Length: 433
Ligand SMILES: Nc1ncnc2c1ncn2[C@@H]1O[C@H](COP(=O)(O)OP(=O)(O)OP(=O)(O)O)[C@@H](O)[C@H]1O
Ligand SMILES: [Mg+2]
Image (cartoon, rainbow, N blue to C red; front, side, top):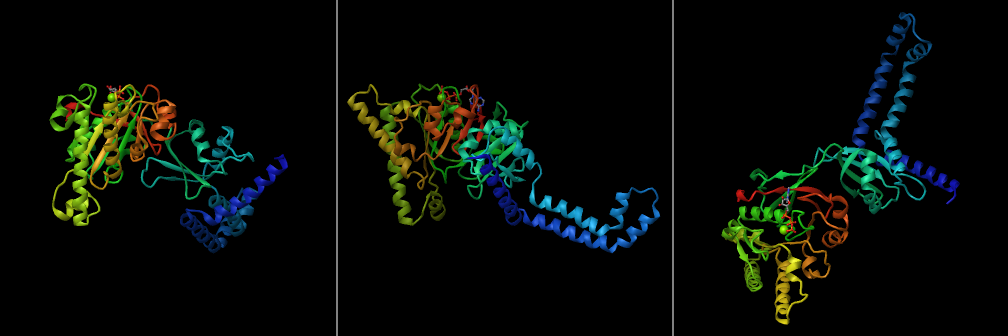
């Protein structure tokens, strides 16, 4: 593209932007208020014009410019106020600076145009967060994500989330001040236990608590390399499930290192594959039973059933740390492979049908092995969380490389969710059980 063509595109876009700002401004009511004030001011100046001129005559030593302004108070007001009003109506504060900064880090389209700040506002859901709304000049979201660190430096903020706005021509950058950062350790306190059934709290992001409602998103997949904090987070979720009256089954093949005796009293533990197969079989049987009961009573889900019948069927949570390790068939005998295939089948049934019947899976893995967790299980684990990880593991858990990019290599208990929210998980002291 020639320089001249680039220039012409820029000019046309500027003209279009101007009219769109004026007509399609989302904060039009506030701006209309300014117009009303301006008009009221004009009437006031007009009514006081004679008094102002009389005052001007009485003052000595006044500059000629000031004298001219005061003698022609009405036109002066209309001109200066009108220009100020036009700028206010069209542009948000800091627009030019933001555009220059983004241009300087190379966030620009092929015509060389950087994103244009349309407005800055407080996030409705979280007053700590400012939403920067940009016209993205056809720059795709992936490019914004790639330049996330540079954008943070350019705008001097910590970015919480980048998302499309109402249409794909707008990008919203959710950010907090650059001085805000997550603490390395956040200790769990019972005060964080959510009162809503069945909401579990994972930790805190820059914007507040990170939670998951198992009634809506039934299953969780946790990933992260060794020492990233998966087991601690898994236990945090299981502890809350117990508190909320759920029954918990845990598959633990690490010889009780992660789940000391206190867990054995409160949960159903599986230490061998036979035991696990049996437990999963029971869970599938419960699922079938509940399916029948719900069908008979015409209830769409467990909560509705409990409410309608006065029964109190508990939610059932099945947890497995190191699930890829468990399902790995390499080097296994034929019988073992068959047993694993059955385990896989039952997990797949629970993953597919568990939601309505209050049966949930929380599976964790550190293995960057794409083929071990079958698609029919993985695709139903909708809430994804990944701690410190390499590109491959991050891609397996989240379907993107954000964990590798955004979780520091020495972080413990720091995670990112599938929707890009980084949080510090609460550290649970097992004595709190
Ligand atoms: N939320 C947290 N806040 C602070 N420190 C944490 C947190 N979670 C874990 N840690 C620290 O990290 C250590 C490892 O955690 P954890 O055992 O959960 O890791 P892991 O991912 O399960 O590792 P592995 O894959 O080896 O089992 C813990 O002993 C603890 O010291
Ligand atoms: Mg672990």
